[in-house]
Image (cartoon, rainbow, N blue to C red; front, side, top):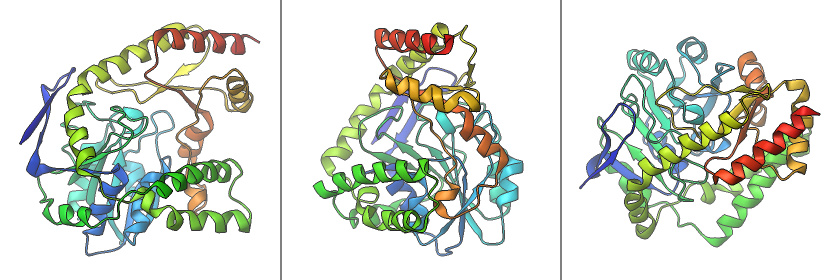
Length: 355
């Protein structure tokens, strides 16, 4: 079976063949399946600014995350930052295209990984359908996509593991042995999200907070690591044909935000031509950021501050300067939304900024 998804920029289509793809419950499950298959259990390099769901598969596979710095403007890492994080214990790396924006130096990072026998997972969780000046989605040993909440093709669940160079047979068997997703897992995931945000916003400094956070990956393991039902797997395959329409909608929403807020004095996050915007991202003065977020929330504007530097949550010093600068200034607004709702949000933001 072959699934072909038309693209809108340079490439003609994304092509998935049954033998090269594995539908999973989440992108985190797909990452776990790859890492668990490795004989050497060493360190895995990831960018410092990342969703926590990208870290837990590393822990579940018996490995340790090592964080690299990111460009303060794009949130993506580069070859220089990546090399600084490599040690003799490095066995793998997960490189995401942050916010749906392709990593410029991914081919160079991939070549370095090949020369140093580091397995590379290209994380396209937020970049399904994005395009670059290289074959995005085919640079690493494995590629991971997500069709989960807030991703490009938001189906509320699902991930895709893809590789043209490695067999997925053993991972198919392993995926079948994962536990089923239960109703309690959904409740645990909701609780986890609340606790995670509380600990993140409060610095995770006290011993009690640190102990609570250490427990979360174990308590919520099934929520992050479970098998997908046949019904859900088939649904993911069928809905891939929606991708071109969703990409166009997302790009149109981004343009509407930018057009509405062009004279407000905020700095837009710069997406490349082939990017698929995850959200409307922008930067604001760090000194004004907290009050701006509060006013937005008071006016029912669904603003978010992803992606933070997650190092402190894993008991590692928050010592990467560019990652910290990025964390302290990046903000985002949801995509897609109806035009009328985008206009309402933008009008409200204009009033907040004019005070």
